[in-house]
Image 1: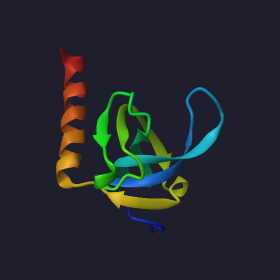
Image 2: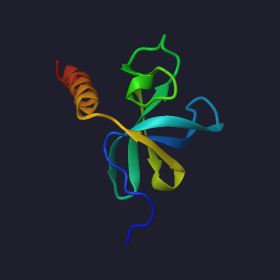
Image 3: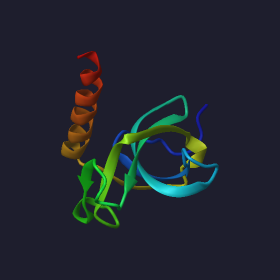
Image 4: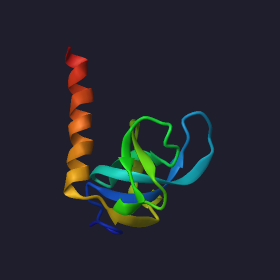
Length: 109
């Protein structure tokens, strides 16, 4: 039996994440790519618009104009998700997955 929130691809959430270069944990926004067996694969979001990624605007629901970082993908537990903030449009989800597929397919070349 599953407990807690049901997360969907395209949900923008707050999550407790550990930084790769330290043991420090912070609450950060992320976008859910997929969920399976309570493990959630997410892409990080930053308000540092100098970073490369997919633009996420206030008009789309972000608190600040931000960037979805497809080079910062990780797995978290459902217990590390205190809040769902909003859901991305189908067009934005398509943009994310199209870009991910391009990056994955470039490994075969």
